[in-house]
Image (cartoon, rainbow, N blue to C red; front, side, top):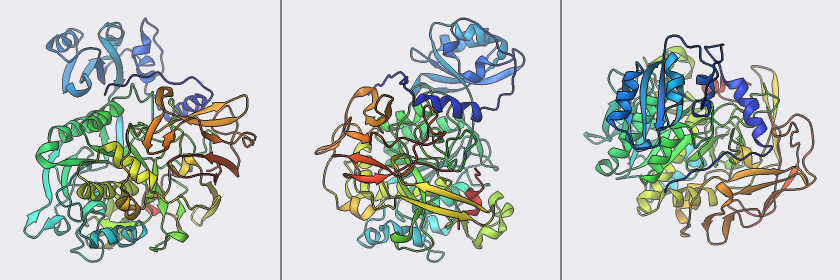
Length: 551
């Protein structure tokens, strides 16, 4: 289904601009003015007209040789074509940007931006081991892992046969993992436990290894987009039903213009459940937002399942679990979508990662055994949800991506405290986290409850837009473009979701310069996460938790 929307101009968008200003690191200082700059991203508008730049150009019509010839006449050269989103990756002289912006067939131009990567206890915490024991292991379901590659290990075999059924690299070299991040993520999805007790969420699932990050964990928009379209092409051949993206970058424009977001929406339209990490910016208070508004792309897209990270405290008992201080919080920049959608274990997760790779060499203290390693971040929480989606799809193969998203969110645990306080002995900093909709989304993943659910939702499961009424200080959640989004019987995103009037107070917050200081009551009538839940907001700088984790 085609979607076109303009960014909502309400006071929530103020945070978008504030966060964007802190995220951009421009290599150019001179600004050039010309007609049609709205077709260029902010970075390209500020580009000095010397040298070349790699760009992703989206056209208003399907890609053709005429487009490529016009680019060649401007001195540009084609790198990759992305027919599914009417876009192409070119290298072009910066001096040609003016002419490119004035091409009437050009919809939008953005740079080819850099992208980076962000269990026994884990399975128990979300109740996956019960479903595994009942025979639900993700068998027959293909999970595409777009990451730094997957190292071939016994944990990814079924007898003599490897469950890594396809591999390709989009960053040069082979598809095996030299960094370690992708292998760790793949283990959380589908390690079979042959090396000990560390079993993944879906130990019977097939893995499609699409390497888009290099030996240092770095990639680009174009490498990730090419991997996404490869997954779409291979969907039927390998029954790819889930796409895991434990990676991201800052948000530079509305999701409707971002090429990464357009690509994940193409996967959604193809019937693939897309699961994306929220980001690790929850401690970032550089703009006085206490970590709010730090969701990364493509986790800012309303069609995907965006995942935040919980800390299990090293036990399977969920009662002591708390939100991590580093998990990124919504609303999203530009669009003000309520994100994340759900949270799952992501702190100090032990998974597959053999010695000798970049991460194991740089952080030897995290090596638990020769083939297992501990990592923290929303990158680790994301494959927990991908594995859960694989179990649901094994049991119910006809579920759509929207029905999977709705079922996971509807059955997520809503039992949280109003807030928790975490002391970091490394930095001597204390962080207070509130359990609001922009921090924990619909709640804490519970795959057993989701597997027992028989309600089939209808309509789209788009993440809603948060809208602040400056007159009465109510925060409403509404459907994208003002349309209600139906999740199931009597479960609707709509204007009946209110962040209570009179509860917005405090200093320096997310929108309009004011923080929501808690506790604040959120009235939730007929919504995914229940009724009359008490939530609040407030929060805290460092992404080192990706490696070291929290106390």
